[in-house]
Image (tube, rainbow, N blue to C red; front, side, top):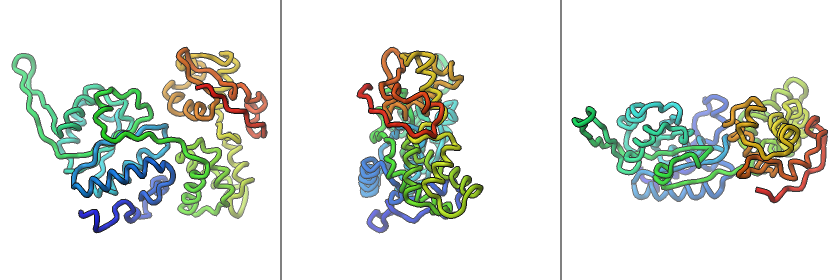
Length: 349
C-alpha cells in the first residue's frame, strides 16, 4: 500500500463492538496520550519503513506494567497494515512452539511477545537467526549423524515487551533495532485518558474529578481506567449526576487509595520496612517472605512507583527507606484518608 494514499498513522478506529476493556485502548496514534517522544520516533520509523517497502526493525518496549506496551504494539501493526500475532514468553515453552509460529506467518507479520524476558533459553536462541537472517536452523538426528538444515522464513517484525529489560540476554537485546523506554504518565495526561474513557463508558465526569483520579493512579493508564470503573460503581450506588471531586475521593478512599496514590500493599510495604527492618537495607526475598507475596510482584508492581515517588531506594545491600519514606507519618499509614503534609523528596537513588 502506498503510504501517500492514506495516512496510516491515524487511520479509522476499530469497531465499537469490542469488549469494554479493549474498547478503552487507543485505536490510533492520534488517540494515544503521553509518551510523546516514543510516539514521535515510532511514527518516523513507521513512515520510513512504508516508504522503503521493508519490514520495520525489531522493537523492544520496556517499562513498568500498565503503561501501554501492548497497545503500542497493536497500533504499530495497524499503522503498517500488517497481520498482528500475540504471544508471551511463558507460553512459548519449547522451541517447537516458536518454530511453528515462525514457519506459518505471512510476510511482514508483526509478532508481539509479552514478557519476553521470560523466554526459555532454547527458545530465545531460535530467535537469534530468525531476527537477523529470517531463517531457522533445524537439526536432524543426533550425535555423529546430526545434520543442520537452514529453513527460510518470511520477513517479519518482532516487538518484545518487558518490565525487566536487564534480564534479557545481551545477544537478544542487541538484535532489537528500536529500543524504547516507557515512563510513568503525568496526572494531566492521565486526566485526558480518563475523560476519553469516561466518554466511551458513558460516564459524566468533571475535569477536576478526572484530574483527582489521575493524581492517584500511580502514573499508570491501566490503573486509571480501573479506578474510573470503581468510581462509576460508587456513583451508581451512592450518588447521582456527574462524578465530582468529592465523589471520586470517597470512592477511592473505599478502595484504599490515599492522596498520593499509595494503596494498601504500598503502605504495608513501607510500614514493614520501617518497623520490622528499621528502614532497611533488606533483601527483596526477605521482604517477600515477611509480606507473604511473590518477589516478582514486589519488583514489578510495588517498587517502581515507590522508587519514582522517592519513598524507597535500592542499594547494593538491599532496599531501604529514604528520608521521604520515613517522613510518612504513622497516622497516615494507619489512616490513608487523613490529609498530611507532603514530605520533601529525598535525593537518594
